[in-house]
Image: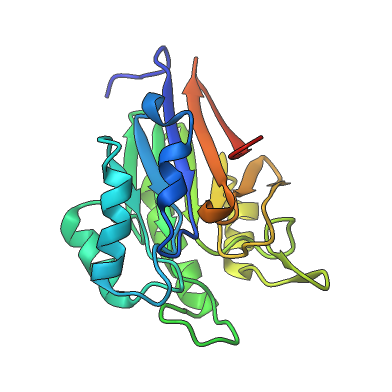
Length: 228
């Protein structure tokens, strides 16, 4: 494979859309993007028709969209995304010959019984399986709907951490370059676990998004908010 270190790339990452994709078109960097990454929660307990409406808005940008389910999306959305060829959940994809993008959607168990919740053991197994391919690339980006536990990206009111222990343990051991996450709306933040940069943009409806850049062989990510 030919290296792309001399080229510049930009991807926009959003999540926790929850049927409200209207603000997406207002992202000023959108005309410059090579692709869109969705960390999960296209809908509010919605199925394929609701997810399709959101994806139609995102795909209107005329660049590739890669997406995965969050805990609020019904399992059939996962199948539908696979059929469309744009699923990230349990998939490793090549962003460039230098960058692997791999995902783990849904969430660990919550008190609310949302449609797509999984045990930590499943999360750990899926991460390990995807890492076997992703680790062969010079750079790796994990898209985990559930943030790693005990970080600035998984805190709810009362200073309670509700992220995934499996995601945290994986990041600590594997150390991919970047982890894009979501799920905890009030925990819009940037943190680090070793060399891994962890970012949670919060809800799209509240203006949060991430710019993922690759320039001169350097992979970076920046948290942005509409109106800043």
